[in-house]
Amino acid sequence: MRIFAFAAALAVIGGAALADPVEGTWQTRKDDNGNYGHVQIKACGPAFCGTLVKAFDSTGKEIASPNIGKRIVWDMVAYPDGLYDDGKIWSPDRDKTYNGEMTLKGNNLSVRGCVLGICRDGGTWKRVN
Image (cartoon, rainbow, N blue to C red; front, top):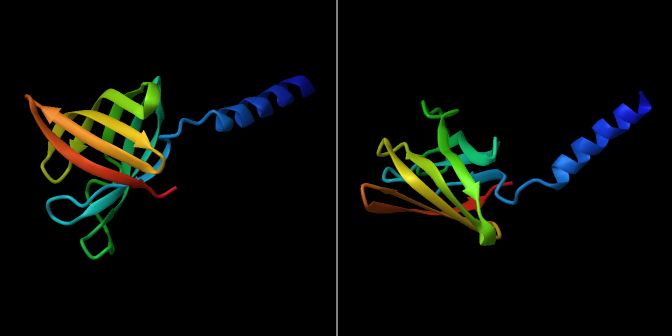
């Protein structure tokens, strides 16, 4: 019985140690309305997904948004050199879903999305935690 408990403890510790660098909470850039949010990114199967966990108005005041809890990023596959690709990004201010790509450099996450050959720079998100 002790061996199973020890193995379980190692699995938990090992899982935490192997967390992908993109996992965490990220502050988006301001949208067309001046609002921004905090998106929590974590593993979802073999890829990464992000959910809006907080929303803020243009003054920085936290607001109640109907988009809290909604998926903003999904199916992002990790590639070498901080690239996450082949996923989708939803832009709440435009209510559009884009083919997404993210590039991680330190505590900055550059986000970009394209639909029908038209690409939109999602800006650089900053790590909150």
